Length: 138
Image (cartoon, rainbow, N blue to C red; front, side, top):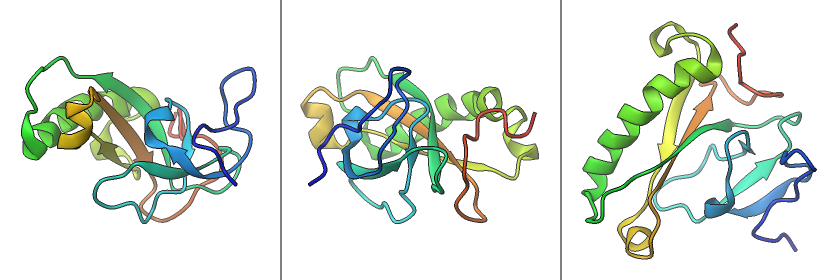
């Protein structure tokens, strides 16, 4: 039975697939099989990046607001934070890249519990990839 925390090597890389990784345990560089993730996400399937996967966490940001900014407010903040980090991660501007990005952000309930993290994920709209997307267009 899978645990909530992924199995990592000494360098922090995921080394075993996990169908139910706690979304709060995700780190930059983690690869996800999350093509069907919709709505409020509490767990996501993770895999070693060498295996086919749908996306990769490329940046994480902690928001400082105390009051919940609402879903639209969080989406706007995530867009502003994730867009410049995309170029740094993949090696070319978003508008020039074949890759796309999405983000995970707190729900109202997780915000009330102290969650302030925005996770940015890069993916190839054409389908699963193997290996990291870091610097893929360098």
